[in-house]
Every structure is written in structure tokens, then in C-alpha cells.
Length: 293
Image 1 (cartoon, rainbow, N blue to C red):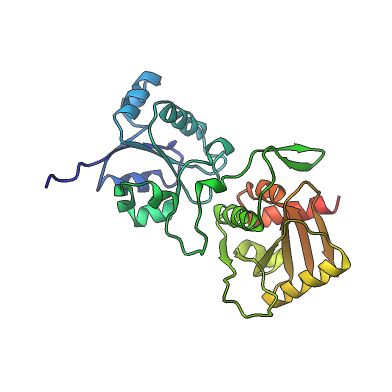
Image 2 (cartoon, rainbow, N blue to C red):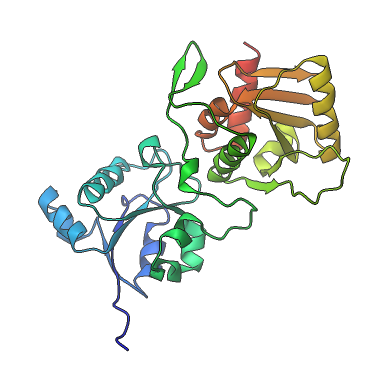
């Protein structure tokens, strides 16, 4: 039996990426890896870069945190790779990919560093569905929808989400992408208990919003007296002081508080947009600010 051919990888990231050198060193133990910032590409010629792309089996693009110098170079290199018909895998921890890249396979940096062998798999499925501690099984169908903003209200360019489950999946993914730990309620939760659909844990929320943060997902919702009572039961069941209610549609964020407890209601579009800040605390602060306008 012929030995498995060693795969060739073009690793794309700017010099300021904090994980770049570590990922490069780990991958080079198993694969033929070339960094897009190495001397061979320094003449700035696109033709040289395209040649490097064509000689690679696939491209790994490390997402860089906001503020990293020259991170747009990585997006340019990804565009060349896609134009050349090469598979591209996004790798990142808390960095969020731009919208035009969100249908590409994604794997967390920590998972790749601990399981570099995943790139040997003949199918991309092991990368699109990386094993995680969470309950969520993600798919490429859950890429964040394109949207526009009009009069401080987020509108989806595509049709609305078809189900509560789809909104749950999108909410779960958005929180995980900014580094939060998310637990999904299971079907075997105690009957009759008011349990939240999702429970978010992020240390940054502790001071202003408390922990944990339960998340209730509805196709449609309001802060009417009846629904507020229902949401308060969910909050009490989670032992929380803040509840986030995520809905579909196009309405402004709303809030309810009695001074001790807080309910924030926002559309999935608003939640996704707020979480693009990269911080759960900053996202909830922004949703609360807009609800008070």
C-alpha cells in the first residue's frame, strides 16, 4: 500500500496575527506548509501568489482580531484561492469572518492546534462540523444572513428564518464566535420546568448583566404583561438577573426592568450585528442602549 502523500498547505495570515507562528509550527510537523508572508511572496506579485496557491492542496486562512495591521491581505489571498478553485478553510478563535466568507468551512484555532490530524480527513465534513464541547452541530447553512440597516432597524436581505430552531442555531453560533460558552437545553430537562433555550456563560457579563445569561428564542414576541411573566419564570429557573429574548422579524430592541431584573428583546439580526463587536458584554450593552432610545 502506497504511503499517504503529504499535503501541501498555503497558510495565510498577516505578521501581526497572534496565533500565526504557533499554527505554522504545529502544522509543519505533519504537512508541507508555506506561509503567504514568506520571502518567496515578498515581491508583491499576484502571479507568484497564485502560483503558490495552485501548488497547494488547500488554503488555511487565519482570521485576525480587529485592529491587526494588513489583515485585509488575508481576504485578498482568500479571494485569489477561491478564484483558482482551491478549497479554503477559515481558522480563528474570537475573530469574526466578514460576511462574504461566512459560508466557508470554519474551525477554531484551539481545536486545530490540538487536532492537526483533522486536515487529513478526506471529507471536509470533519472541519465544517468540528467536535466541540457544545451541543450544537453546525452546518454551512447557518452562515449569518446578509442584512441592511435603515433607521436603526436591521432588515434581512434574505427571507426570514423558517423556524425557531434555525434562530437558536444562529444565536448559538454568534455567541460562540465571540468566545462565549453556550449550553443548549436538552429534551430530557425536567418536565414542567421553565428552562431557557440557551444558556450563555461569559465572564465579561458578570458585573453588568450577571451570570449565567439565559436566552429564550421565539419566532415572535413582545414585552406584554403575559409574556413578561413567562420570561421572568424562565429567568428565575436559570437563577439569572438578565434574560435575552431573540426573535425573527424587523423591530427595534426593547427592554423591561423592575430595577433588579432585566429582559432584553431583540431580533436575531440585531443580536448578530451587536456580537460582531467580539464581546458579549459590548453586544448586550449596545442592545440595551438602543432599547432605551
